Image (cartoon, rainbow, N blue to C red; front, side, top):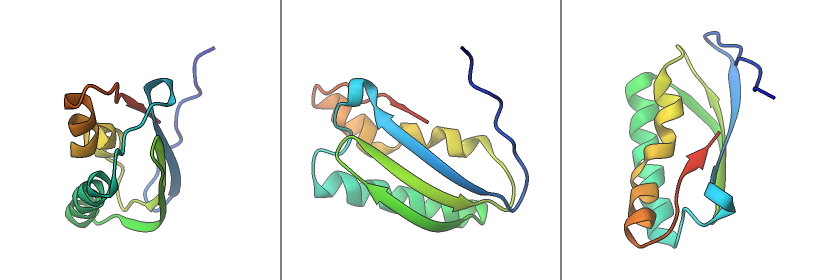
Length: 97
């Protein structure tokens, strides 16, 4: 069954969950998490989003974000550097919301 469309409006709090394909690791170490957080901070700053909470685990992460305006960049978080790095190391690192 198809997922219901996301309700989008400025100022909403969004709980986002991204996880590795087949629940495989997307963060292979502390360096991957630090790279991700740096990229995420830049995205939030450029788009005036406020991060209320986050949890990084080896195979997934959760974000609670207050967005001033919706932007497809939230969906692009799956393409952050740690995902690419894990993929280059031979890991399957696709992420999904």
